[in-house]
Length: 147
Image 1 (cartoon, helix red, strand yellow):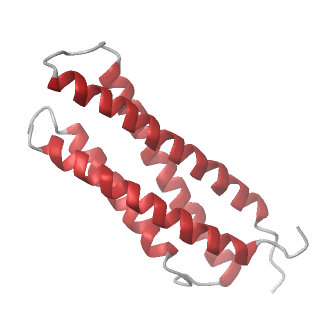
Image 2 (image 1 turned 120 degrees about the vertical axis):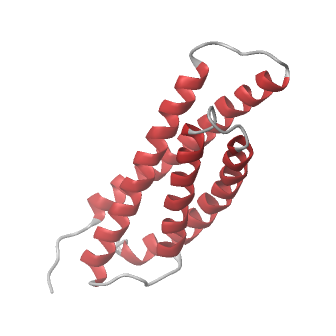
Image 3 (image 1 turned 30 degrees about the vertical axis):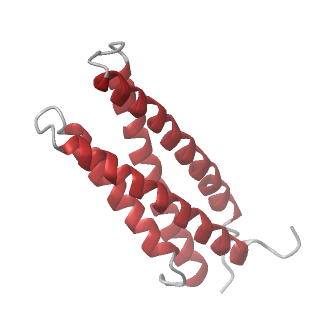
C-alpha cells in the first residue's frame, strides 16, 4: 500500500516529547518549591500553586497528544498496534499522568493525596525514561534509511 510519509507526524511527536519532558521538570521545580515552602511553614508566592496546576494541565495535554500521535502513526504505518513495549509504556505514562492530575486537584480536600501525588510523579519519571528509550527504538523503524 502506498501511504504518505509520516515524517511530519514524528516531528510533532519529537517536539511534543521534548516539551513534555521540559514540562515535567518545570513541575518538579515548582512542586519541589511548594513542598519546601510548606515544610518551612510558609505559603510562598500566590502565583506558584496556580502556575503548577497550569503546567500540570499542559503536561496532561502533551501526553495525550503523544499517545494519539503514536496510535495514529503506528496504525497508519503498520496497520495495527502492539509492535513494541512502547505502546504499553505510553499507556502507563498516560495513566500515571492522569492519576497525578486527579490527585493534585484533590490535595486540598484530602491532604494524604499529597504523598500519592509525589509517589506517582517519581513513577512518572521512570515511565518517561522507559517511553523515551523505547520511543527512540521505534522511531528508528520509521525513519527512511537515506536521512
